[in-house]
Image 1: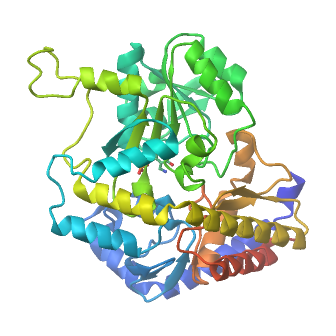
Image 2: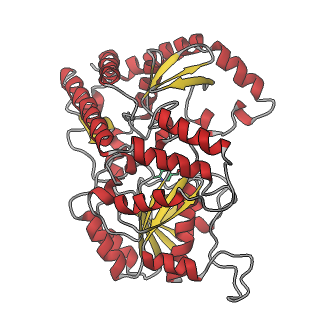
Image 3: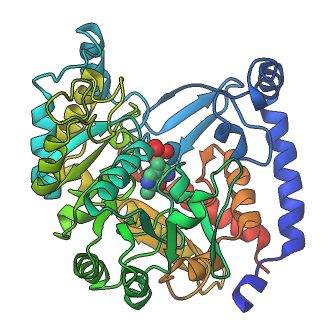
Length: 456
Ligand code: PMP
């Protein structure tokens, strides 16, 4: 497109070489550590993603405070990715540190409920609107359980998902559409995924209805706004329409708010009074502690009670619904969730972060204009970003026109060399609960400098 042509590809390529060279010069200790670590870990990292997110060498973290973290070379970064929203309360947030420290000292886990659990589940019921909750360790695991429960209740197997989706590293989500076929996008997946997942475009009720008409769909699962292909907002009435369709054709509906719970108080489900059967929350609500939750209706809770996952099972002759895990629902997770809800995820803090998110989006739009670019900023609560077109996308295909990986990745290393950690390619930047107005101004200044290097 004409707008993309405004990016000087030669300058961009030269800039990437220059910035990656500078980055390598600033991170020699990290590079040497990672090389040595390959003897005991593939790629030198405990989780492959930590290497796979970057084209240059990864770095090794030394510690963090508030919106900043340090690497072992002594570089400091103001973090606008916040571990893909697993750290939105910042590094070492006092309320979480205090609550979790107390919980660890008092017994981290008992494989029993602790009394504080109810203050979490009752508060979530109040904020989100679904009455009953279960804990897991990750949003991936929460979505896995939701799919199992939906399959059991409906007696169907297929899952309806939306182009641009991501619901975790689970088979049903690691698929894409090629022509009319659903195909796995990664290696090591069962061929069954291609049969079980049906993909349609977001914001297209007719496409969803065509899929639901088969009466084979157990679960419709979507983020209420797609956040894993930059940002795609639901059109007015779309989510309500999806709810009506799922009910008409006997499927259950899950809104995955692993990310969007941080966009508004109560998530989009609570703040927009959306109806659904399940809601997934994840990423430790941004506390940095590993846990996730899913909410459900009373009717679904009744099914869970009737089909209790149990080793005893004498009276039902069944082992019940396959849910749970040994480390799920620990006292640590409960303590972190309670402190987060009561002390960080408050209406005032959501409002403050929403203002900062708007300031970031406004700042980006001012910079785009300055460089003569008819671009928009993504804008939803704390989330901003670079929409490289005058109109915001309504689906993943449109969003992909702003997914300029070469530009985004070069921008990230450009910013890293200037003490800002920018987002992974499909995300933000996003404001955290630890950022302040000065951090936002710094990001906008760098965005201006970056575009100054590559816009003709
Ligand atoms: N759902 C959504 C919407 C996500 O964005 C993610 C992670 N990016 C997940 C689920 C999975 O979360 P986790 O990796 O913590 O299991």
